[in-house]
Image (tube, rainbow, N blue to C red; front, side):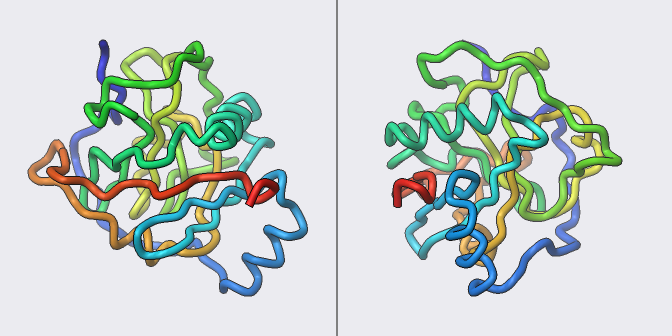
Length: 190
């Protein structure tokens, strides 16, 4: 099976911050539970704002898989310092996905959405229309991904917890004994 990964191998410097305080995030989640996702990690809960305005098919996929418990106990198999943490593959190899068909690309023009710290995108193969279940969370900005990968959300609370995810070795970022997603659910089901 083909590896779903980010094509670029260079690493960006982690700069820029897209976060607000926890009280505001909880109020936002309560106001819009259909477009809020909770990602529970070993160190606590991360709140993600879903962006159906940018990628309606990808948001529906993330919500459907999360609702089924698909992501529970899956590893962050590829984590590169200053770049991103990638998960969503139940095999932990970077080649797995769900039983659902791959999704067509929903790339946003850089003027509308960019890959900055806390942004959530979908991993894919070299084919733009190959995203399935694997996703990544950005540690810092990475302009070369803008308009090339689908953005489906952004971390609005708990980015400090994402920063604690165990890093991989070398430029590939493959993690030995990786940290895992404890649980991932739409806020409407929490």
